[in-house]
Length: 146
Image (cartoon, rainbow, N blue to C red; front, top):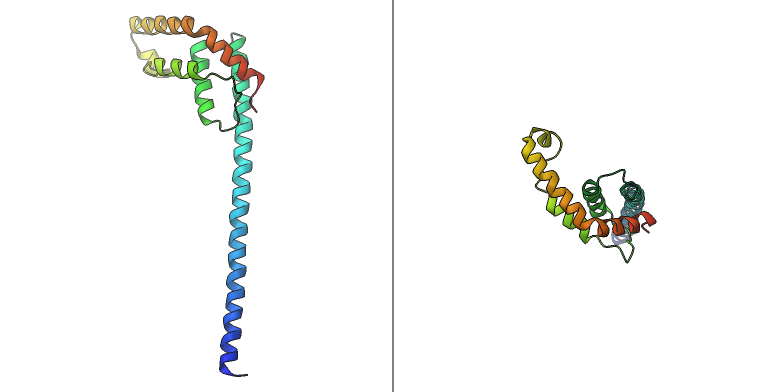
């Protein structure tokens, strides 16, 4: 064999090895995308179940309206699946934004009683003002996300 034949064979072998490596890398990318899609689907199923559970608790009166609206809004922000066409989340956003300044947990307990009462009155007014729209949204969510 001539030296050029060896160079051609070496070049072809190198091309086949690189093509095999490229194919293996593409397979890895495809497999990772499949895993991510499965993970996203499982996450959306968990979120959909949690949303339906919270909506049912809100409708049953087991969850305060403002707290339910806030929790539902946060879960829906993280949910990337299909939503019912008649779902109105504007009320959830309105209640969330209207109460975002109110302290929670330990900060709530540290508030003076007068300030807590003021926030409670404000939340009661918001609940009364938006109750019907909130219950309609909760009913739509209870019936299910796709």
